[in-house]
Image (cartoon, one colour):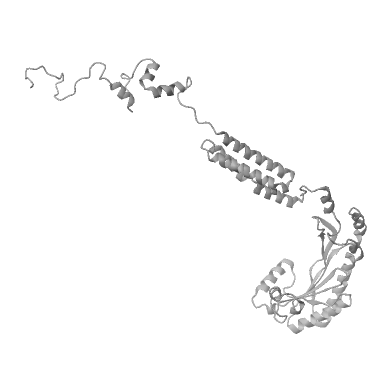
Length: 387
């Protein structure tokens, strides 16, 4: 029971106010403040030597402070993983190797098993670096290098360079280089080219034959002519990766300026051509577009626009002068039989490119593996290098 005569418990005039803290504060108040997120006021900040403060903050804080170097206020950043550096160095070294191979023209090296294995090893190291947190940054840089400079990209650049310069040598042996310059054709007797019809002889025969054919057809049918392509020669491949001294000859191409249409008329024109070329030593002609030629019927229909000569857009007749290498071609395009318009579209594109008439009769002579009389001595001399 409280007596009315007891002295007052509060020094304040406000009833219910908390009591004034004792001098030095309440016990344990400093420790609670140090553990809180509210900073101490300057007057309440603990004082004393650093060792005492570290002790007051607990053993864990003291252990952390003990591991710091003098003058350090924060822990050191994480160090890069050695695996990341290995991946980066491997990617750079592999890229440098490929650049060197590209510079020296070693195109075949990019397509060998060794380069593929090296590429896979580098990729494996890069992936391993990316799988680690410490090596992820360097692994990403290495991956970028590997994606830009890889076997596929560098191999394609090397192939383009070789195609543009024609400088491919690869790892050819002296024997391979020797046979690359072989003047004849692999698997064929080179002496036959010395005894067969020469390039100049075939050129003369082609000019004479086609001149007579044109004159006869003009006199008989009133056909007029235009030269639609000039004669050309190109080297034949020798079968050892090089070019021989032999050439493929294609004569001037002559075409009629008016259509040759109707089955009966076309047949008569072709028979006239056959009779004229026979006078120059050519053999009887074979109609490739006719089912009797032995060509697959499906192929005939696809190539010539119909299954029978009566319905076909194109006719192709052929002759040769065996044992000599000349081939004589007589082709007729009759767009009156073009029911789909596909052949007309194709012929229009060809006409725009070459200038030859859309339809009519065309005459051409072709010779394979022809040796010029001017190269006979060089050809014979070159053969002495080969057993």
